[in-house]
Image (tube, rainbow, N blue to C red):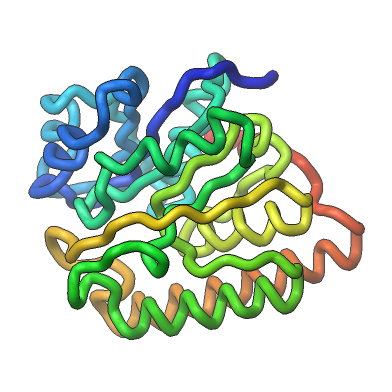
Length: 248
């Protein structure tokens, strides 16, 4: 089942009560019809803050960025939009720039658009050294293995519903963004990067804010690149799929 010309927004959130209302307030009016905040087990009132700000709030008890994204997608499946836009709930992205991320997909020029923080304006200190190194390494590997050039694995992105159905997304945690980009490269989806602004997040990062998170994310990202590359060599292409049944 393919989507129409509507845009839905999915925001995974874990303990973002201090920022989520600001994120929601800055989403441009044309994209506010279906804004879904997927709470991933917050203990600080994030769901109530999101609901008060007008979002549809869903709950995903299984911890993980990808698990929260999959929960949001599963909720959209019965009445899919044409485009899904993802962004973070910590106010590091600039939601007011959503049109530049979404428009190439809406107009049919791209299947997947990545908002590149590397190409855009960044507040000093917003993108940590470890994040810059990880992005550089991962994107160089993707380019070398799959001949598609990316500069970033940024969370601010838009993808067509038809593209999502072909991608068969499944990763439940840190590997979500890179899984999407590697699979898109393997399948020959039309990808595009646009510059987006980036600022220091509100609160502490669950990934780059700790050594354990940084190491864990780095290892997972590299593993996903290797895993998906080997799958492609074994089968010739990434298999299209539906959202995992345990998340629907």
